[in-house]
Image (tube, rainbow, N blue to C red):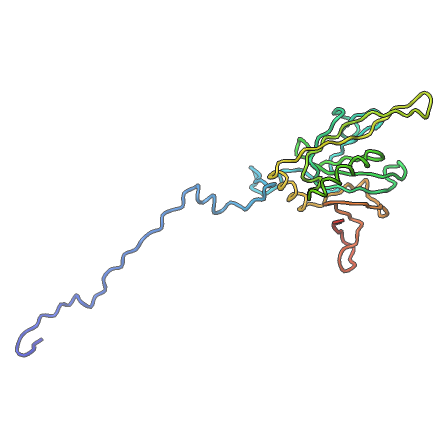
Length: 237
């Protein structure tokens, strides 16, 4: 090419594209990959080591909690009427109801039914009746005015001996007396979350005529759900 009589050299490389630099993202470490793929767990959940399935830490067959019983004649607690565990029982309530009904072929009485997690992480239930129910109310009242419920405390139930001098020879019997201390706040939150995610009831003690005085996180399969459908509904009295 000539310009004003002078030759100008043309660089044929000026129109060729420069090669672009490329970068490769570093591979995820095993630890990071596990965090990315790990499911989000609630505090009461865990990953099954064999199946990888998210399961509850607490065992509950719906409507069939493990049965703890208070023998008011002998003054001991037992499991399923067989395994005696002593004169005291300590637990932190998950759910409860206080009601009047004729259940278990024992006639119409005032009852307190309390659900809790036992030492084997099983959802369990225990029943009290008569004067023991009055003593439970004595726990509920001061807690209510402190903006707390039974779900915030760890209860120790003790068999308290009583005598009936109106008969001869005099008779003896036992009622439940109760003391409590406040539970660990973090653990209490975990138990409350678990209770709200489950339908807690005991099938053997349910009727459709129970007069419920108060309840918390108790699921009543006889209650009618929304829109008049035959579905279960949560009692929140």
